[in-house]
Length: 146
Image (cartoon, rainbow, N blue to C red; front, top):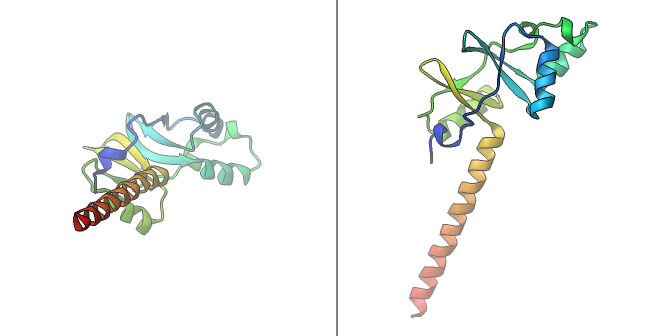
């Protein structure tokens, strides 16, 4: 199987830690995404998802512009390195019950992988492996009949 660097999204959209829930919602809507990496001084310090936004803002009587990002983000994000085997990343996601992994190299954010990225990769790998099995079986059949 491949490495995380082969499937990670490199253009990670980030948000500064001093923003509000409203800023998060606006970026989600504008970019059509469901998560943002929260950064401070260029380093990742957390992750905020649509689920965080919905759960944590809707349970308060405050407007989204009054809710700070630090109140809704998760500081306990999981991460892997670019050279991590994809199998290890999948196992980490399953073991930790997370849908996203940040990809860090020397503490610097270089990418992100999601359940969707892994599903696409695994689907294409299964299709390719299946096609190779079909070709192998067909070639064996042709060899036997000749």
